[in-house]
Image (tube, rainbow, N blue to C red):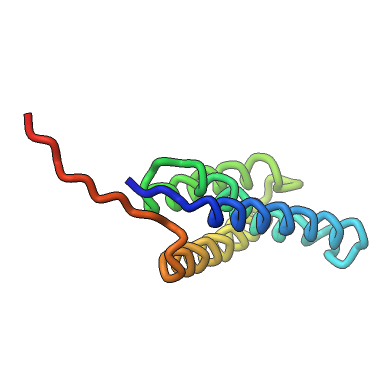
Length: 126
């Protein structure tokens, strides 16, 4: 079972909050064009969902990443896309794929910096 250290949980939650606030500010100040905002929102949604979900789940790393990615693909296709056109859905899914790569990079950094405690328990025999 993997358990995240308290400092790791704090780092993940703070990064998630900063990412949400930063995206909100940039969208509000029109630094992101409205026509392209749903693409960036898809990326941010993928990353922030992982940042808020990973510290508090008992699932394995790969399972958490894949579950996050599959759910985000569904959410971006239904919620964030302004119009159901092939081009919009491909754009949203493309940005989600970039978010997936960012999530993989975050996961790699977490493993290298040892923010996760891995408890190795021997298998119980019946």
